[in-house]
Amino acid sequence: MDFQFSGVSGHSWLGSPIDARPLFAPEHAALMATLRGLGAADWEREAVPGWRVRDVVAHLLGDFYGRLGRDRDGHRGGSAFAPGETLEAFIHRINQEWVDSFSRVSPAALVDTIDLIGRQVARFFEAADPDSPSMGVSWAGVDPAPMWLDSARDLTEFWTHRQQIRHAVGRETDPDPKALAVVLDTFMRALPHTLRHVTAPTGTQVRVQVDGPAGGAWTVTATEEGRWSLAVPDAVRPAALVRLDAETAWRLCTRGIDPDTALARARIDGDRELGVAVCQIVSIIY
Image (spheres, rainbow, N blue to C red):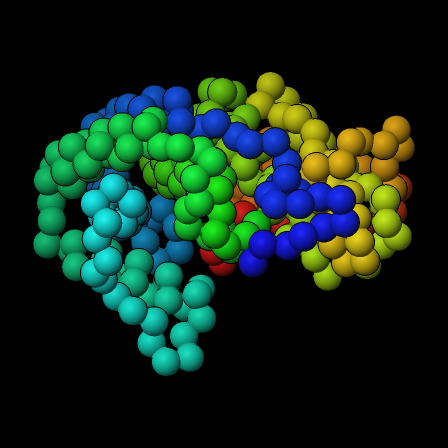
């Protein structure tokens, strides 16, 4: 879906483009350092509900192969939607099928393969045209999406899965603000879609401020009844200001915590209903 807002055409309502391309190689290097530091028992630890560390790694490998096959090689094979199946159900089904098929693959073989294929994925993104049309980003409400958003979305997925692996083995979120800043910037492109059912007078603005070295501020504006944009300049005083710390923000966007937990940690100034609506943000297929 490619909404046309009043005075905001094309994809400009998504805000300024993000260039995530230089971060894929460092992100892959960080993933490999994490995986090579795992002990035998670590691979069996739960990383997300229902998936062990080895399952998350197998899933990442599936994402890598899918990107290369589809966008680099023009391959159109693979699973199809079942009758009446939603996008969310389809994604969860094929992800689980892939993970189940890798139960015979050893951690050592997974590491060798994901290193080889992940480096190819990094090279693919480094050479990608950020303005070309690409896969839709459902949580941002845009299909097709510009490649800059699609590629940034993949970076957030790779980064998030690496954090899940770190947490599973007792390590905290990677403190490097360079990658997290881009991850948060990408996640916040879900704001217009998050507020799509919220009616407010034209010009109403809501600002999300994430504190810390990786943080920033994002202002979403009502440009027509029920529609919102990140392209409009900030007002001096938004109708609502939502302040979050970086850890709360990324975990909320990936549903590592639920909106009620985020609200308990957030500071909301101004219209609380708008602030509560913002905290429903989700930046994954959920």
